[in-house]
Length: 121
Image (cartoon, rainbow, N blue to C red; front, side):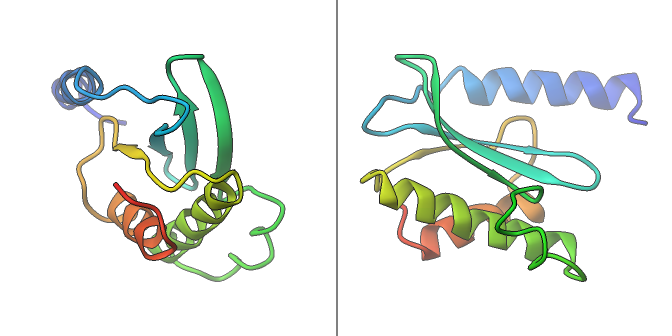
């Protein structure tokens, strides 16, 4: 469990990042959340308050494919899946919201895979 000092730094970073970005229907906010075992990502249109698409390591399409992969490799597959879903909705541009996480490791792998799959951010 993180110490109180680390937790305060995370909350401060989240507010700083989140205060600068806003998603729309044409260019949604791609929000990443990671737990100790899984990674989740969703495209959110803040102007209407709706989630457009979502993907995670718990998605049915990825469940069997992720068996035996490392966490960063699983995050890469989730990034590809969310990009595929967004492109099928005719959305090519997003704003990446890393939240309280540093752009490193699993979060970076997710973002780079989404870029490689055709999203622009």
